[in-house]
Length: 275
Image 1 (cartoon, rainbow, N blue to C red):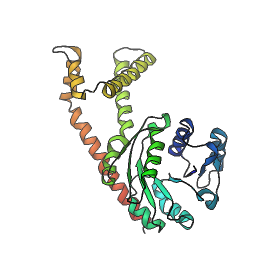
Image 2 (cartoon, rainbow, N blue to C red; image 1 turned 30 degrees about the horizontal axis):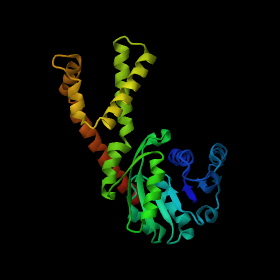
Image 3 (cartoon, rainbow, N blue to C red; image 1 turned 135 degrees about the vertical axis):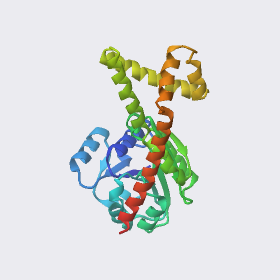
Image 4 (cartoon, rainbow, N blue to C red; image 1 turned 90 degrees about the horizontal axis):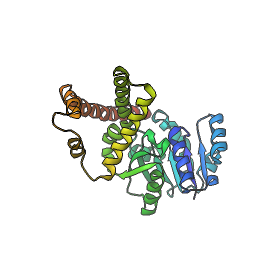
């Protein structure tokens, strides 16, 4: 099996690492290219034992999957560059935010199987939450291949493409929301007199434990919260402040704003790429 990456940034590298670690693909069957960063290409070759090339024919010939991981602003140029080397047997997987499948179809001028995925940055530690959608030409075998690859860097859910902007706002940007909470918890720890490194480890383990409870207990978040919120207790006192400050409403608005921005950026990128 041959998998070729167009774009060799952090997301592509996370996927490459996952492919190798989970033994989904042999190292010498993974190919990668980027715009012009030869140092990065050499690092990837040395670190993972993959093949790198700037020859499009070599990169794309007989590839079982072509992963398109360039920046959205560079999509038009990169798609035009590879278009002459594509055929109807190609399986094209895009991880570009805001660029819809029909834009890719029109740009490559080739009717082929196309998937669009939205991972997040936790892919770098194998914990991404990835949503993926497919056009009508993707076969069951190709779907299974895509799911196995993205499952190598976390969990994967199949969704309709029109849900991807909302998923970008929820889980695509989601890690940053959690880091923001951690920043606030670290600041509070400092103000109540806790040693920085001890507080950090306690916060991290608290997040891991809460995530595991949500994953394994089968209980809803509200039920788990109520179970640790005794009347008149410390947790209730803290939760009451969050209610008074409108934290729940703020998070809802935060995710809605991120979703709207994803839609807006998609329109901006598409308009720029078609002019």
